Image 1 (spheres, rainbow, N blue to C red):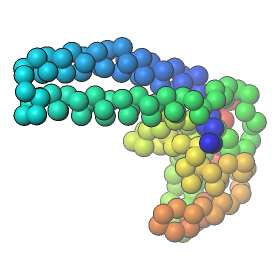
Image 2: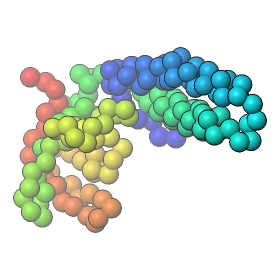
Image 3: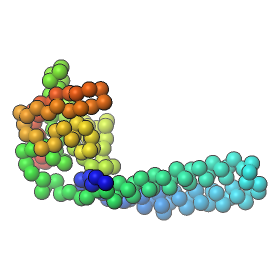
Image 4: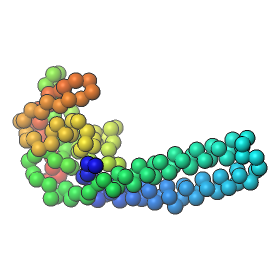
Length: 161
């Protein structure tokens, strides 16, 4: 199983989400199931079956988050190499097919935000994988679902001022 880099903040955010789901949300659902069960015949009790389904989905989400935590390792961005694309870098690229420019910040699980500016994408994404280890001026050919794109790295901000 691949291990993914994550910031201390991202790790703590995931841990807190698991805690809330386990200690706040799950007890609420257990109580709702208990109340629905008290209403009698379970075979025709839609409330009971709905709460059981909700409980199953919540447990699946908890398991997914715990797997993310188990497969992540905390990285201190200040320890990352400078001048090359790594976890935590914000990278400016030019798409050589149309000269459009994009900016991406490479983050770990639970930190991705595709609406942010710059867009925060997972280090495991195809674009991040294609750019990792490259320097300003280098060109990466990245296979994405719609084909191959060629990206030229125009700037790397590795957090150092």
